[in-house]
Image (cartoon, rainbow, N blue to C red):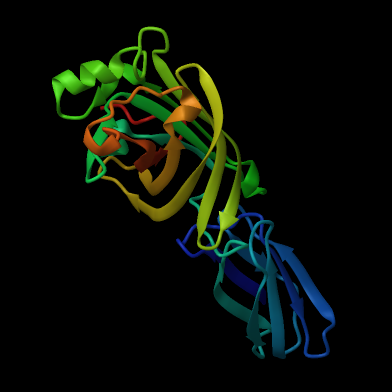
Length: 272
């Protein structure tokens, strides 16, 4: 006898800190129980046969109500109750995640001559993500990029980009990003943080989309993200330019950062 329920996110992950409150048709509370580590509620309290309302709450999620019918046996099986993140946006399960550089891309796009784009990427970087269990706004992202690993597909251009005219990699070998907070933005997220480039620190927000999770062939769980941001070159003293005919600058003043990220659940990547 009693009530059983499974509390899950839209991705199917257990919500271990959910609370289930059950009321009868008069609105009187007859049962209150917490989910276990697997997001399962099992309460042996005997209930009088009839209809009940089950309300599921969890910090960071929108409350959800469901109906339950208690049979003559005194048992009610609510089934699976799905909770949506407050604000409508989802994230992977709480805990540490490690970015897999082999399956991720850190790139940037610059306008060239006002008519086309030049794309580049950094081939050497590392990053970690920590999804906070109770208050998502306290989740953290930290990344370190080796500036000299810039690759645009043109050796002469890459050499110039590594020089003091641009990245100045000898004086500033690393580009770093450290988040200061996370907030929901509709069905997406905004990651607030500080970018350090050429030794200059500026606040940069990432427009982040969480693409979901899945199992990998090595027994791990992976999460995918896509993020973008716009950087103004002058904010980081990247003021070098060349004016060509008709006063058109060779390089646009804005860089568009494009991140395609795959992260593995855990504090480190699996051993090859």
